[in-house]
Length: 266
Image (cartoon, rainbow, N blue to C red; front, top):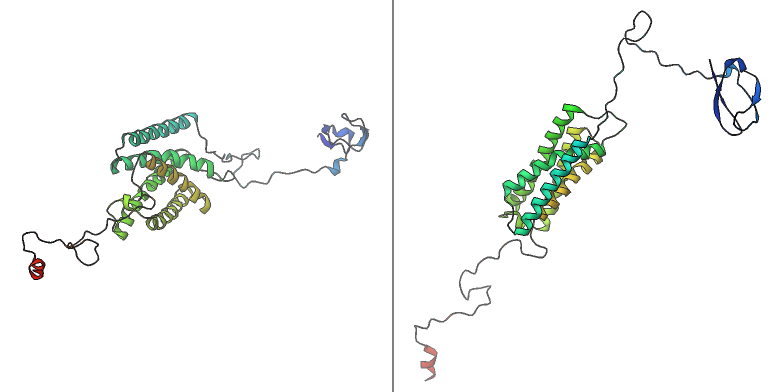
């Protein structure tokens, strides 16, 4: 059984035969005299006993479960980059043409880009010390999480319009954004935590990545996400009658009627 020796001078580690136990000799690295430890001074680390079934020779029958890492293969990276590039070019093309995208097109884009962003976000944020999801289980959770992320945009479209009685997202004020976006972030983080078993902060960062990318792409495409800064969020009420109260217009005189004031002066 070899004896592990560490030189106290140069800290060089090497092994010697057990027949040199307790003897002194020169270090093969620095040539200084060192003493080989006795056999009784060796620290032996024994493997923990396993309760799994064993064969006649005492070896365990069941092999240990190997941990599977979440790996990003080259096809997944290329596919994600191509999908992101296509959506970016499409959004830029819509911006150049000046035609705001339809709601159906925005919904389709939010669904298509969701799985790659969810997968990449999970690959970056999941704890390496814990065993992550892999294979079909990971694919199923990514699809469910991605569709849920896309559906959260429905809250942005319909809830402020219902609460503040807006006709479209182009009228959304800063108050509507301040109330709807935090709700979206909290709900998205909860979905990420439940679907991918992330921590709360990791779940918030995971959904924030999707929200920022999709919001930027929607803005790039020319989608009316909110009212312009400093602009009116609602049209002003029309004037009910000319010359009425609360208006600056002068009363309009009917030319068909005679001017009574001239007759009085005469």
